[in-house]
Length: 276
Ligand SMILES: C[S@@+](CC[C@H](N)C(=O)[O-])C[C@H]1O[C@@H](n2cnc3c(N)ncnc32)[C@H](O)[C@@H]1O
Image (cartoon, rainbow, N blue to C red; front, side):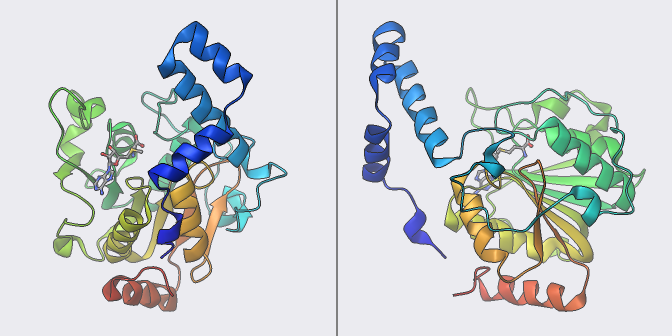
């Protein structure tokens, strides 16, 4: 789909230049180049609308959030969201789910009692661990990430020393190379949180469509807070009944009817999850 949205190095440099101001110079002189680069990055994000937690969906200059926004209760009327389920390591972590997003996922896991949840993008394993906490006795979470790079990242470390580890199946592979055949139509819940560029998003979404069961639910993280997933899923939502959960960066696709499921399978099989 929209490969033209891939941000080139030149484009990044121009956007960085556009975000330069006297404050950036002050940060450069007082705190050094790394801090100044970070300042420029955040300034740019603020002006594009991709860097203001809580407020970003309603910012007056945001006109790129086209997925219909609804309260979570409307999509899951059978769930009582007035209390919080138990969470492990609830404090926010960079690139991971917000605490209230974890709460939503935990509630949905409690309600659907899935035998299998598939997560794309394990990272530290905080979300996988919390999903495992709420699984039924015979449930498992299958979570996929690239093989760890020694000294650079520790994929899944939040669950390494947890008894709940027995419910977590770690797969080291890329979303585009993983052979998901044994998992087709087997997951009641799929949580997509790996990729942020069009090609990776297309591979991740095709895998999600293949592994979700009819009647299941797909979540996508980082809608409105990251540009790639936001634009990619804007396009998908023109074809499928995707909803943006109010006050969160979660998208949700409940696969409630056979025609939606069939359409998703057709899109996944054709290798083009985004229609022309
Ligand atoms: C945003 S983090 C995931 C956060 C995690 N789901 C959580 O809630 O804590 C994204 C992860 O996806 C992984 N990732 C990125 N591209 C991928 C790909 N093409 N295939 C598999 N994993 C990928 C990264 O290595 C990274 O660990």
